[in-house]
Image (cartoon, rainbow, N blue to C red; front, top):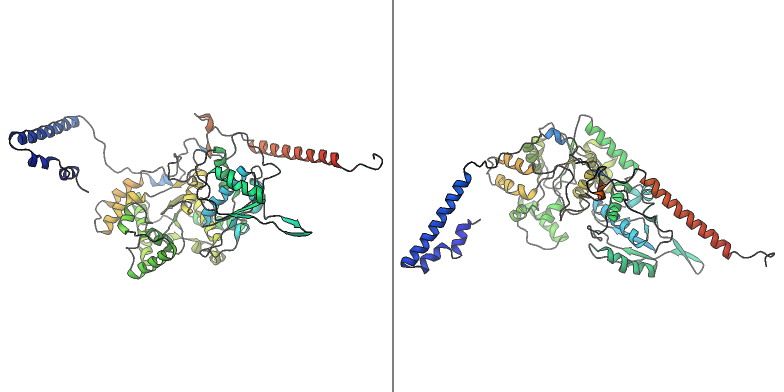
Length: 527
């Protein structure tokens, strides 16, 4: 960086005075500048007298406290309605099908969006389809990952759900109902669903939205709709019993000897190729990453140092180890690694393992049968649950709707469980210095960066932070709030909703009986 004075000089500052000013005029100009400079220096000197300047000493945090949950500030999670929330009408406007593409967590976000879309359109949601793409090689679908019965039961106050489209009768034959295909725009507003999508639904009876990743804007006007997203994400979407059982077994093994930390180590081929952070690898490895990028992502010139400085490179395993060491974690810390196949082999893992030898993953503590589908949705689901239940969670790369982002939101909702979120952009200059051999004082510099965080406590959502990463304050409440809008709903809210639902069903039943009596054929005696 150029100094301000040097830059100013090249733009026609003091240096031009010598060229345009001659004799007394030039002398006067130079004298004026000197006087101004003297005055500024004098004022600065006097302003320093008797003033205590802030210390730049590193703040130390007791890492033992991080094993506990973060300070809630009097908030607790709550996604129940806080205003009148009528049950879904018995007659809907049609059927909504969606295909949720991407990984496990992109799919979770898409399912939440689909429920909101069905609610505002008064549509019957067909059980969402999960994309079985070439990466996952997984055909298990929604019923193979999630508890369908639980999903339908939890959302019974919100929308109607069916497992498949009904059959219709045509010319005396039963055939499957067809749905009208629509490619929805990315981050579509609620108005698009209420006009374009609803219009097609009323015309055709059923619509099929595909792909359905990021197809509803995250910031929408309506806290009750945002709370509906939380009900789906944190209550209705429960994994199948065998996934929950496996996850519980792993957590119990890890916790048998005390606390444990989970780390989502995103040092994988697809992410490294996408980020363009290839310079740290061998020529052979760089070739593999570049070929993968050319095949799967748009062409773009990416420079390693530039990508590092804007925080776009995933942390290496060694960098993760240096962060934890600098913060004060010792080599007895037990760590669960949630990750796919790490790129670069043991060359990159060895320094990390030397610093923290007690590393585990689902292959070392999980059952053998899990390995058959470790790369599939079931394996990702187990990693998700273990990371959710861990005492501390640390993501090494967070992007929209990926594993780490959604998981941080779930941990926030699950009682403000501790999160260590590295600021990759702030850490980049330190790690670049280390790469270039300038290691003096790096631990103190890392501590300065790492201890400027809330560690999972409630905080205001600021774009580009995702709603799925931080649903505060919409999905949280206070028992003694300063703002009435933050007041927790009554404890019997489910009973109220159930009463509304039963009342509505009774009204419909009575209307049907009245209709049957009115239009029933008269008996012979009456005729």
